[in-house]
Length: 62
Image (cartoon, rainbow, N blue to C red; front, side):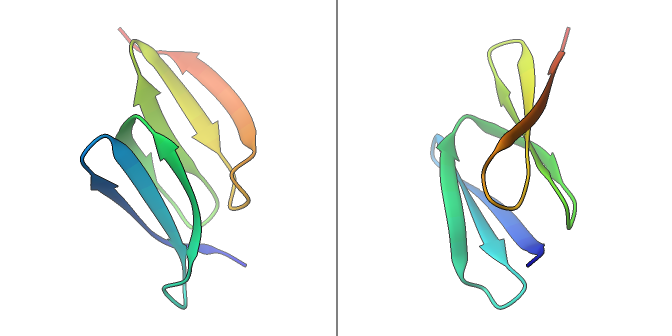
């Protein structure tokens, strides 16, 4: 299963697979996405999540 699209709606990021089925949602600001991960900015921190919504990394964003 791969990420097909991530979309910002209000303060929530919605993530969908390649068949347009919703995979998961998280609060924050969508920073970017690939077929393998989604990056969401919360405050000054970037959080990276995999296709299952599991956090796989963080990075400071100045």
